[in-house]
Length: 508
Ligand SMILES: Cc1cc2nc3c(=O)[nH]c(=O)nc-3n(C[C@H](O)[C@H](O)[C@H](O)COP(=O)(O)OP(=O)(O)OC[C@H]3O[C@@H](n4cnc5c(N)ncnc54)[C@H](O)[C@@H]3O)c2cc1C
Image 1 (spheres, rainbow, N blue to C red):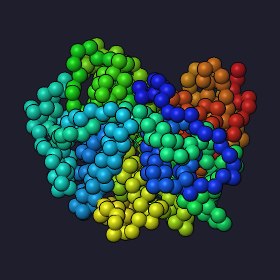
Image 2 (tube, rainbow, N blue to C red):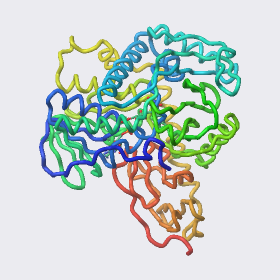
Image 3 (cartoon, rainbow, N blue to C red):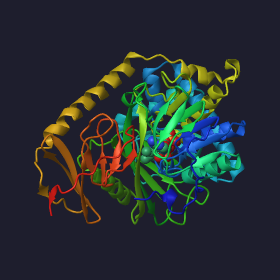
């Protein structure tokens, strides 16, 4: 499964890793957060090294829908439901600053983008409350949003009950952005180390990161790893990992010229592709959606097939070109976590919780992290940095956290109960995987590309029983969203270790 944005390699190669090197700042993760933070710091004269487990844009940053919008579906309405108007305004101001920085960077780096009107639409009457709430929250936060009746939305090939619209939003190729940020980092004297997994970070006695190739040292460390890889601060329990699908198509005739996302029922996000914002010779439409918690769907492939089927129904003749998937993290209080990690002595920082709106939230986080690291005077910092940094936890935040904690606890025990089959088990069919018992151990057995393998089916992070993702042929943890390849190699999430391999567990 390759994202449309990755069909041609674009990111620069990394520089050799020299263990023991010292820098002013180390950024872990070369996604939009890590690279924009590193570029901002390097431009202010710091010696910065970025350490990336894969390659730039490896995860969500290279596999999203490429909508850079301040409307963000029903997000503003949802935040307003739980928080005071001032916090929604701070969230919008943060995203506006992030968007402004990213577009200025794109213009300077020659990354094209297209201005479009963004819409959040209600497919049925049940979605109208959400549309109105979003409209009111957006207006209250100073955005010139407009309410539209269903009949005003004319270019979609199906009726809608109503929509809220915001002019002058943007579509952009996110991988072109990632590649340009990586180039800029190198041009500004920064280091980019790819294929190096960070396994730990410490503030004392000297702040450092640990990797299999050895340590690096710096007084400032930023964890820009999606969900933070350190358990300190328990952020893995304060966010939930949500995976979503994207499918690109070549559609005969016209496709909608604006962008759309539904707020009720299964999510459908509609995004045209033109030469100004993506590889339009490969595809002219992306449809994303069917988000779900990581590792909790019995048949992942079904959600993907539904998305493709839905598109072909509404856009007759649509030919699928690429399908891909990625995950992002939503904080229980709906506002990203950005700043110093508890007990990190102000030397280790993190940014997470963009809830699938990272194209503006990531540079906003980078602006704030940069101001903190450089010690910019408080009075010089934008008002939104203070408002977001000092927000209170409200009862609904706690409620959402408890509800998610309950779901995690259920998964913790049900995973063991479900794995009733003892080994040896029948060799799984191609693309399938099963969890079986071997004494007191649980073993994940799968067959991929004709190879049957056994791995420890327990997540090395906090002991969750892994489940098989039949769409991507991976082992996914339903507790805190860590994921592993069929051979046990760690892909993402709070886990930092691979799964141990276990030989001879199936009847061949
Ligand atoms: C399906 C989908 C569609 C989306 N669509 C949009 C959209 O249209 N508009 C929008 O604004 N946002 C969208 N988003 C959200 C956006 O993509 C993310 O919020 C954003 O990319 C997050 O960037 P990041 O750099 O924080 O994290 P990531 O992109 O996840 O980057 C983290 C990096 O850290 C690296 N890493 C992790 N662990 C380690 C380790 N131990 N050692 C070294 N490196 C490590 C990873 O390999 C990765 O490269 C979407 C998200 C999804 C899932």
